[in-house]
Length: 378
Image (cartoon, rainbow, N blue to C red; front, side, top):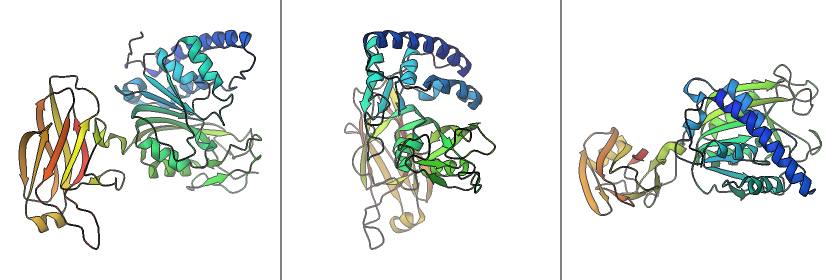
């Protein structure tokens, strides 16, 4: 079993990717010698790490540290080269693709997994539908897939709610075909015809650079690092010579909202990509078993003027597995953090209770007790 070294700098990772690629080529040759029915994905997925060496800055040059203790996701995994390489570094990895659009129906990744005796978990999933990701991820790789989707906004939005960080690459363009209208600075996308780009009907939306930034921001991401490669002068959506790719490191504005807990009862829908109203009684469960003898709860919330004018004061209490924590009384509107420590248990469920709430009315049919902006148990 490989011990994960999170302090591997991206330059060190690139060197290991070189060696792993040589190993993969030998494994592919062995598989091909005994089975002629696999046509390998023709583009080198591991080449992305060479670009990441140019993209990442500062502390982000240690990308494995971004993942933390959570699994890493390879979304649109092709033959799984990135997933298998990251596993070789000690990461827990999940790989997702759709057999109907995968180059070899996902036979390639499954054959490599078997040959390498890999523990990478493989999911066949149509991410161009109303899909749901099965768990939360510290870091996702979403490379060369976005422009193959009819519904790129849904994919980005869904991923933002499940991954803390994302390495994204996609095709972009500065001009419409034939060096027509300049779109570089306009937040737009060009919709390709069925055979307009590489005779590939699975190519759909090619964003301008401004368009790509707009969609990732609207879907709940913040751009940390950005790099354009290829034809960065007069790129277009359709020609080989006009090919330009954007690589981004993104951080989610919504995934960290409750990264250590699962929300149970009493929560309303996420609003403005960063907060939720609660009902008067609401609850959470610790997602993973505690790794230390005591835990600290931090609940960040906001009490608006309308609530405090109506209620005068708010008392917030909490109970861990039925055992009460000391309550707190708030008499003014504003932002607060409710912090309490308690002994760890094998399983933790915390139920919160607020003594007053806004009742449903004509403007809003919900019971509203407080606006929660963050919650952590650590």
